[in-house]
Image (cartoon, rainbow, N blue to C red; front, side, top):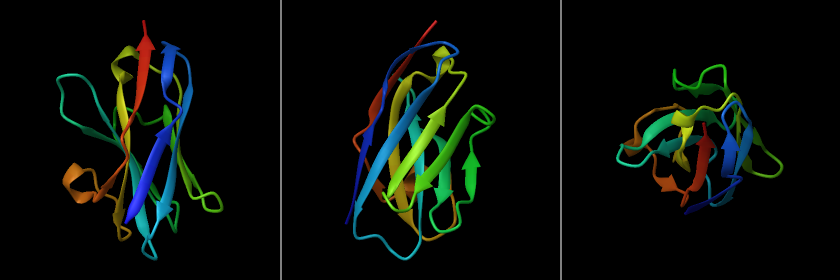
Length: 124
């Protein structure tokens, strides 16, 4: 079982920055993918970014490329999402997720473990 706990959400003005963290604990396989998804009110949960833990290889949704950066700290087993140049349309609950294996995927159904989410609100 893998446990994920997000933190770092909050209210930020448009153009601002925010860093989300996700503490990863429990029994992980030798390699896994950790990622971020988000869900705005009335919308489906969507892929934001993912990273293969062993290699550090990353993937991003087109909507956040060049603005968001995913990273991980092996020693702290913590996942991060650095968000810059935030826009009101980035407002959502952000979820940390994990799946076993090395292949990064953008489908919510490919992730077995989820955190409870952290709210990010970007004011215009």
